[in-house]
Length: 92
Image (cartoon, rainbow, N blue to C red; front, side, top):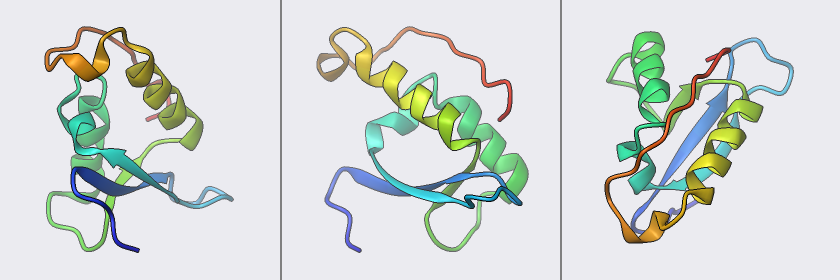
């Protein structure tokens, strides 16, 4: 499936989980968000930089959904580039 410009297909989940990986389409701007950095760092640790297919994030889907909710609820999210917030992922 084709992804529109400015968006990125990702897969979220943990190896061996019953549900496997779930596909999401996110704005590319998420990649620059401070809350997203721990997920990218973890993906690098697990999969490295050179992989085939969509970006895969080794994180429980529920944690990812919470992260997405946190990013989207930030006041003025669409009007600024520098965002302040913190969140730790206990299971990622």
